Image (cartoon, rainbow, N blue to C red; front, top):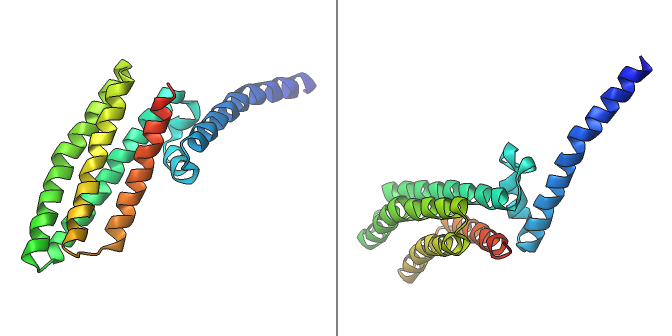
Length: 171
């Protein structure tokens, strides 16, 4: 009975120890990315993150960027359905189109480049994809359109983009 208990404890330590090590890597990478809270929320949303290396962590953040881009696009679609002003509708429609086509495609390119080890292209693609919601925010603010929720989502997207680029820069 005692031997069985010792074996169980050893097995438990072998399983938990690597998970703690990878969790430490997640914390280290997110702290180095200078947005630890947003970064950790993203990583903890994916169960595979506890087993991820640095490239895997960057890949998970790119997935979070893609999800966040979908949230922004859905938010814009919702705003578009309620908006009455023609000028605002025109900008929202252009943003919706560019986010759903160029943004998603560019993040897909970033993921492919990360997989093949082309980290410069990965960072460049993330930066290009970041410009799209920034451009939308700029154009909407220029015509005096306000949406706290939309701008908050864009800020989170910006922070995640920054985290991904900082992590990739350290490869």
